[in-house]
Image (cartoon, rainbow, N blue to C red; front, side):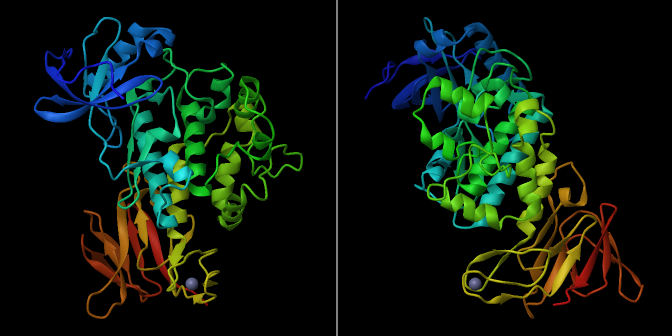
Length: 435
Ligand SMILES: [Zn+2]
């Protein structure tokens, strides 16, 4: 298969540079992808098909939007942001971006089981980075106009994410003539009642999070399996009659199928209530029909970091979702998982294990929400667990007998019941669990 551009073709960019086409890589409905040389480096060129541009309502607005995004720079490193724009070549043009490293796989591949996460904690980490990327995007006043599972790239080993197709990102409520794929759009966008904005993005983001954590599309329950796909059904399923498969309403017309959604049901039943609650809120009929109460990115970050803290590893390798920070049985090997200590934060407590971390957002600090402020580490000699100050600040601490101490950056606190230390103005108490 060849593209329309021949190898060796030189194309001018709007920044007075020249790129050289090296190799045709792939194509889809809207564009062809090439490997090119640009400023001495190998990059990718997305070259639009005329059919895509002509179906687009306003080519000039689309082109200008890309130019603005390039000038403003990427919101954060997770975005595979356009680097340079080409001049028009006849009726079409393209833009240059980095090449996605081969270790990254699309979320669509995870959905069909071609690739897997080797731990549930890594699923949560992927969600955390995705939410954080949306937060960075929204902080810059930008939104997605289009979203799809094949635009989320995840490195399953290192859990890094890349979001591609950033050409459809624009200022809130701005019309650049793109309508995304209904499966990932907020119902009001599917029905043409709203333009993409932060609220619509938050609905789309929740769909992606549900897919990662619960393996299926949240609105594709039993009902979507029953009838043949038609434009009318799509607009109903994702728009006027959208229904969350786990909505507990007894009249839910779109419950999960016991066979097809078996894994989704099983994982849903294991989720802590606070995780279920945020999904039930974002996919409630109030949120679907009236767009109210969609959780913010920071709400998700708080829930997901708490969830991450509540997972402990059994010696058999299984990850156990603890409840109420109490010792519990591993459902795989039936061993009892001991949780001797907990850390009491202002809103809830988390189990102390050697993988525990406290993130900034767990202390109600919303700047740089995913920065770890403390982690639990075993000492090299005795293997006893300690709490490690990972901030640049000295913490105040109080021993159980009331003595004041300070904890310098990089130093550690022994795990002793009754110690209280203060981070970011929030008290954290170490408490022994009464098992
Ligand atoms: Zn086990």
